Length: 344
Image 1 (tube, rainbow, N blue to C red):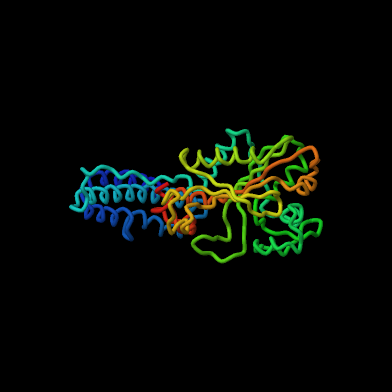
Image 2 (tube, helix red, strand yellow):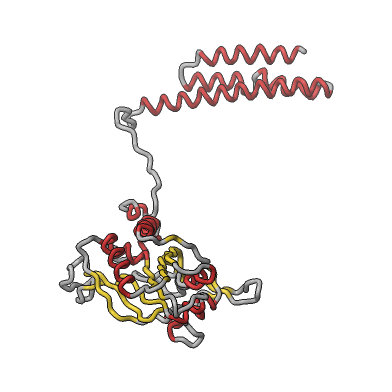
């Protein structure tokens, strides 16, 4: 068909002439001749109305192919001239070294969690994961925190409107401790686990508080486990995390799910025990809470509290990071400021 042959000849001659184009002005002139309103291609496209349906299909397909080929050739040539113009401009110094692309990295909190888990793994602990959505039984009741217990007042809770399949109220866990009973229900001693994860408290956000943060729960249950075992594990953990020269202090504290309970502190990194504004003049900074598992909690987990004993502890990951690196505002971890996060 005559139009198809014309298109083939036009395509080949247009591509041949494009090779001879030397600058952007000549390229624009080529575009007008090859793809403009008065080009052969446009003329053939307009003549389709006078053809039979079969001819229209055949010629139209050939015209579209020619148009696509010429458009792609024009785009490549235009891009080449643009790159050349940039390279020849005074604003670009091609002798400068290339810029290294910015690469992502692990978040500081993820790094601290992994480091803590590695320390406890070296002491024989395994990692267990728990539910972030819990029932009041596992979050409170099974841990010896009765409905009218004052300890519930210190844990402002996110309650969920929907209930579980058994019609029970649900909540976002306020600590990782529910996993103590859940794990004991399915496993008999000896038990030695840590439970890293997110926890939630309905409280105002400030320099030291968030509504979502991370904890690591620890639990060990077996025969003849004593407070000495707890002290040995935590002193080793803190020295590996903060340095072998750091001092530790254990003081009696109260937690409903342990008896006796203890508050563990390390000497202040800023003043090394002399007293400063960071440690409020005491020379010590609280790091975590711990104690011997309450007999009732063992019973709730299906463990014979006459035969077995255990210890438990909980540590806040953000608090560890703040103490270790001298960070004064916990919100820095989640403001997504790459200048801050890139330091770790």
